[in-house]
Length: 257
Image (cartoon, rainbow, N blue to C red; front, top):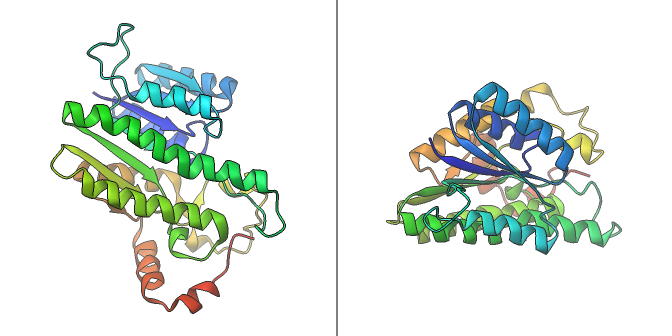
C-alpha cells in the first residue's frame, strides 16, 4: 500500500484516478481548486475504500499554491514529524481546454493554461523525483493527449510539451528505480469539453473512450514501466497515422475550436 498524489482530483480523469487508486488500497493526497468539492470527494473515498485521504486545496496557476504542493511531494517520511507518508506515485492530471482562439482570445486564460499544464508539471515532477530517487522507487504519470500530435492550438502545444518532457525524464531516470509515463488518450467522456463550452455533438460515439478504461490502462502501463501509454487500439492507430502524415495534412485536421 503506497501513497499517490493526484492533481485535478475532483472531476474527470482525476476523480477516476483517485477512485481506482483507492480501491487498489493506495492512500491519497488529492489536489484541486475547489476546497468544498475536494472535501466531499475525500470523505466518500474514505468511507467506501477505507484508505487515508489528505486534501490539499490549491490553484496550480498560483505560484504560492504550487509551491505548497511541491513541498508535500518533497516529503521523504524520514524527517517529517507530522506523520505524512512519502508520495510514491504522482499523477499530474490537472488541465483544461481554453475554449477560445489564440489570436483573439483572452491572453490571461492562455497564461493560466500554460501555468497549469506545463509549469506545474515541471515543478511538481522535480519535487517528486528528488525524494523518489533518494528512496530508489516511485513513478510519475503525466496526463497528455493524442492532441499532442495535432495542430490543435495552445492545448495541443501544451500536451506536446508534456509528451516530450516525460520521454526525456524517463531517459534521465533509467536505473534509479523511478519511472515516468505519459498517457495520451483521445476523446474521453468527462466534464472536460462541457467546461470549455465545446460543442462535441457531431463527434461519433466510436471516437469516445470511457474514463474508467483510460485510467485502468494508464495505471497498468505505469506498473509495467511503459513510457508512452495510448489507451485503445483505435487511438494507437490514430496516433500512428498522425506521426506519419505530412504535417500539412495534419494541419488540416479539425481542432477544438
